[in-house]
Length: 390
Ligand code: CAA
Picture 1: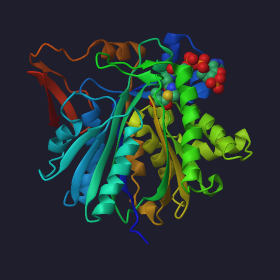
Picture 2: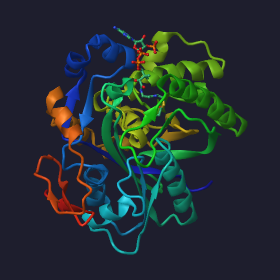
Picture 3: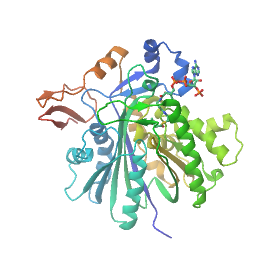
């Protein structure tokens, strides 16, 4: 049989600040149950002034590098829709912060929340071509919507680092995948905007249509029946979306399932996202982290994955959990990175939103605020300046 290829290590990081939905509801006047139950969100990670997709990605990747070294990494794929430059890949900044060797290709990938999955699949193909090589995949995003818009309650921030290799320790990717692309204006961000433009209801409907489309293609290409999947990790723009998606999928698969059964299948996938918020490209892999960290008896079980990026591109695929994975998890570090976030009130959140980096080409230093090991310390001559603080 072909050599198994998949996720050898997985580590995530989030930002240093957190705004709870209880605090947000004091400002919006919404019944907090709309947030906690209606969309399934309790809190959202908010980046400090000196945090961005690069610093979060560095915090996510550093422990992976410490554990495995850099000797076999030949490619770094950085997936994001919060790009900081129209030309230079964010992964090149990361390359220097992590002191990676120069003999590495680095590139950035974009297609809304989907590109982390594109990176994972491309990485698996590179490793299949040369099983000696490893690929470092980063998915890092900050979800930002207009103030006082319906999307604001679904903001969040996180980065996931995955080391893709042959004979992986965590999850072996199954070869069958199902694809679905549809040119649709449900959510997008023109180059001149820092917040997304979104038609919330249309985006949710487009997401569910993509579940059907990707599942149909997955089945046509020899995918596993739904009964053989222990759970399904979904992209989670807000965690309630995963429950709706699984209802859609069970219908598409012709299975009758009660809401209670759907709740118990999906709940283990939402534990991190419900307190971090939407992390776009990272969100699906935070769902995987939540499943693995929450249960160390899943060896040999197969998990489904549904990746959705507005615009839109979607993919359904599956992975087999590798026996012994429990020893390689980073559960304590993941829980600590969430627990250490400093709660802020709405006024502090607003202040952070009101001060974007100046664009005048001058020198602007940013005071230290992050609790992470890497920070954006300033901007000078239009260049972002980073430093290692840990
Ligand atoms: N108690 C319990 N539930 C309550 C409630 C209360 N007091 N008040 C309201 N609710 C429920 C509503 O019934 C509704 O549930 P259902 O959808 O099951 O009917 C839910 O809370 C949300 O209420 P509304 O639909 O009224 O909320 P809204 O219109 O203010 O905002 C949203 C919802 C449109 C999804 C908004 O959050 C949004 O625009 N989000 C951004 C876009 C998004 O996330 N789209 C998802 C698909 S696109 C994608 O996945 C890509 C991506 O990452 C963006």
